[in-house]
Length: 304
Image (cartoon, rainbow, N blue to C red; front, side, top):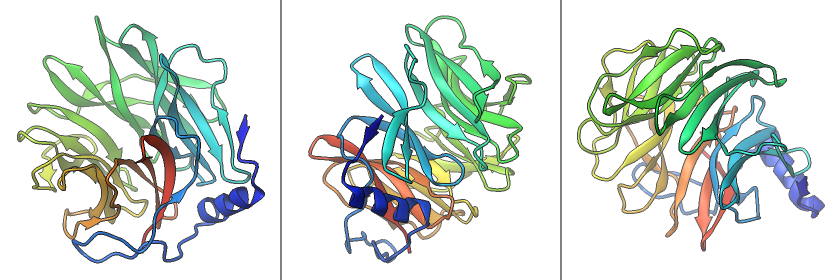
């Protein structure tokens, strides 16, 4: 287990993450970057990180970290004391893309089971395995799982038949259904707070844009129309806003827009990469992965 030994850092982390801190860390105006203050660092080790998510209550952040040149490991940051520990300390293969149900009771993630072969694992928070989706033949595997708010389904991205579709399964891995049937790549699905819709990224129109559609599949509505990739969208807990990563300004930055695609606001401004936005359960903060001088750490961004 790693721990930030400065007690002031642990206390500040618990205050900001665990208690819904929303002071005016950043101030926003439409179409203008937020320049009032820098995001607050939650980790300080600089290791390469991917896909942070809050585990239910907002007092824990789970993310993937490059532990060795050949191994990604799921890590858990505890807001109570700033400690960091491996979710599965005995894992010998890479684990990626953690996802939790809104109440934190169901946990999905990807696990490598061979060279370029990835399994989708679905577990109860207690550790009991609920189901799995094995990879197909050859080099293949799932991407970007998301658990429905009612804990009944998992949606994910998978390349099949020359296209990358979105699929849905029950939490036991059964009843696989195709949700998209378009050209290009469909990826990064996330459920709305009521489970009725999915927001995702797609290259179906030649450039990655953000779309939303019914959770059971159907016509997708395009929400963004910009040059440069718009990817990794996440519904806010109340379903009114969507956070996403955009390259529209020539660099990966975090944006927030209304759920209908209107009023996009640029949240970060950095010469390096800001990516992987994830909403705090209070809907007023984001945790992101930010690169600073070649180092990657988790940062907390307070919204208006």
